[in-house]
Image (cartoon, rainbow, N blue to C red; front, side):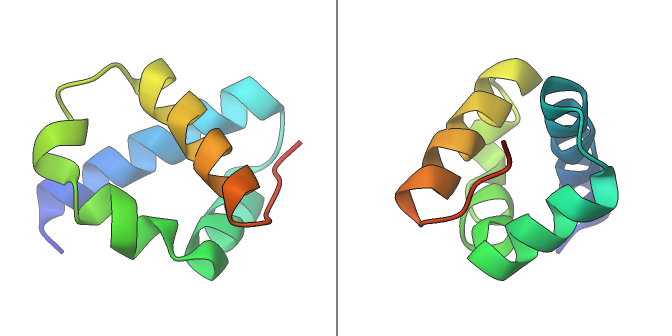
Amino acid sequence: MTKAQINYITCVIGALAQMTGLTCSHIYKTLQASGIIKDYLAAAYDVLHTFSLEYVAEDVITLLKKKGFALC
């Protein structure tokens, strides 16, 4: 993973924390357990970083629900 990808993933986690009121640590653990960090955020970074953080955060919430995980 590149430094740019790590910075971007950190921003997405922060956006999710603001949207949900959960801690960044909790969100990171959930995203890590679901595989979304590696398989989605890092893998699709080239495309995802062109969208707003709010859009990507909402997309991540939807993806988590489809995988059987929930933040809210």
